[in-house]
Length: 387
Image (cartoon, rainbow, N blue to C red; front, top):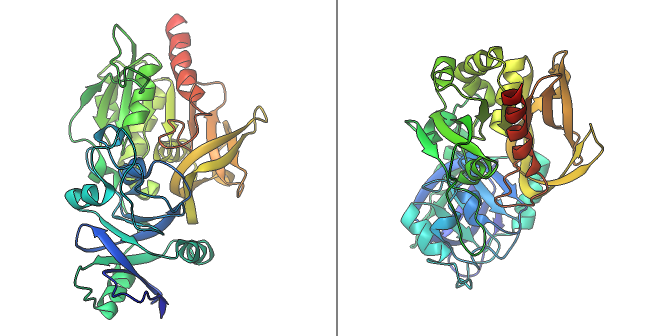
């Protein structure tokens, strides 16, 4: 059926695997893409979201209507190129009004090869995702408005989905590199960390730049390794701590090569800190399991409770899989839970500086309640160094 049909001839459409079709105005790149559809409730940071490697294989519906009003700037890219397959918005992007903007959203998307569609009833679309689960969709943009709907629906139905799919290798770096850029601050902007720091190896499953900046700002001398790095590769750098980054895809699939590496690092008794996919990788390495969620958590307003202190933090999240807390072995405790649905949001190994969280404490975009986790990791390294 046609869920929304504007009077003017549409130049884009999004076809769901159940046969529902939404019509709107296309912008950005011309063409087609097939992916999983998720919604994001953040009110800022659309550029950071589109360039977050955790969105590989996904089209993002933005529930906030004013998308595009601040334009784009290369300073806000979380990786070199957009990773999300496309974007769905309520209102067409307007002319940017921000002193940092260097290009409007439509031009930026076109240059980056990503499709956008505006004029969509995103409230209805979001309700459908919540009720039915994240659907497989085909997003098409044709300025002439010519669409083969049956073919688009067939492509959406034929897409294999994210379960069993390892995407970390697709978005990871291909060779190691050093990182010393720190968090943005007025008026200097981004600055470089100087002097000797805490030797940290960061495993790149799809790392966001702001996560690496947080590590650098916490005093870490960061060396980034590809997702496929082995324990021997990591330990050869003589690290004082190991960081496991965020990333896309099915953690069980990525775990086939990541889990042995993490277990080797754990055997070396090093401090370990994981975020998002890195959290799931750590849980798998410790003996836990992961599950595919109905529609996942995507937004910058997710309340999480630290069960060890009773403190509630408002966090930024982006994940479609979750750690099954019922499978955590003895000696691994659940430290954080979602106040939306009670799902696991953090673990720690009892008596060791090994911990991880499901959410994104780097806050890009999002609240800054959880910055302290980077300093907790750095403090654990300093304590081990002092001992």
